[in-house]
Image 1 (cartoon, rainbow, N blue to C red):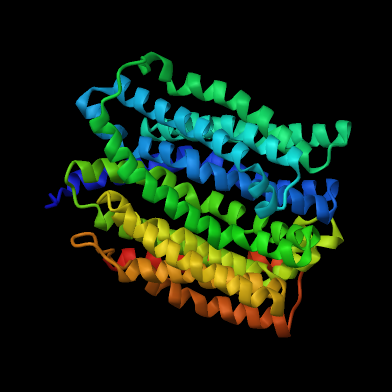
Image 2 (cartoon, rainbow, N blue to C red):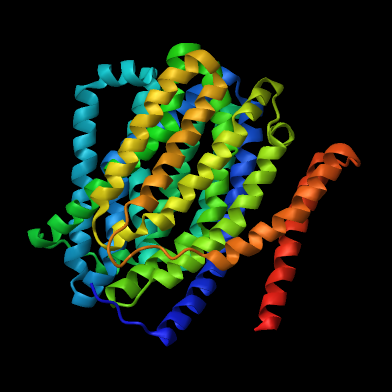
Length: 483
């Protein structure tokens, strides 16, 4: 594809993306706070064994969603603009809904037919298995409607729904645990009720009923969705293997209590950090897709936002890793989970590499060559499983950490090696060079804290971050003045 260079359009799109980021940021910031609340609240309510069972249940839920539902919503986002331009939205929505319903029906048939295999593979009780199957229905509907909101660029509606969903889930889960004493399954019940209510809100916000009319499916629109979506599902499954399979391997070796510790470390890193890091991608990707469809060169914008991501993520993750033990103590209300600090540096940097691939693999999504993304992530996932099987018996929790970090780094490395013609990512060298200089006062202050002066852990973490970002701001201001 030949691109048209249009500086005015690029400038307008940058402004639009920043406006969307501001609109999305409340949901992401509050979502991050919600995720930060979840771990201390849930660990105060549940034993390590029960928290481990909850972690296994969520991992199984995500496994089923990846295969049967999530990719339908992502395909809906990718081709929304195309069908909007063709003015055939009723047929398009009919196709999406039909595919989603068919997938969920197939899931129930397969899951109930091979239920014994699920029990044995996931090591999960029957009542939890049935609860997860029911829970996937509202979760799948939410996934599709969320992507339709993003495609319509309704950032404020997305923000409101996300915030309400986050805290309603927490409140209902606490209610069911406290008053019905159901243990970990109460958390799944709270999720189910909350997400069902949010689905009703999303139907109203997306205005889908005004567009949706049951029509005959045009099969020529189905093939592109499958061609785009199936590799995405396979890719997401590979990511699941990288970040979730360790729980099942750990459970088979050391039981649910150790899985609970892995679950706490996971809860304090990937969902918490990815929520705040995704402010950029949730705002930028829909507009980048639109620009690409209009044959505008999107590489400069992708490069710019890759630099912003590194600027936001890397210092935060470094500080969290340096103060891992204090970080877990602050966000876990049960001393039985403190060993999770051993995993924090590995999981945090694994999250960094996983999140940056949203930018490095965007080329495959734009070119509708998601099978490449699948291949490199599957390779990384297989490497992660091999590392887990090899390292967990020898090193326990640390083995889980090394395997997760190694698999995520391999995925990132492959994504910058395999580049499509015309979509090579431009290195954000200006931001990286200023970050490198800003690291010097950061290292000096860290040395002072380690050897000369001591404050509370939280104070030191905030001061280190403040010094780094203050130095970066001064360098950026000096650079602007020189120009």
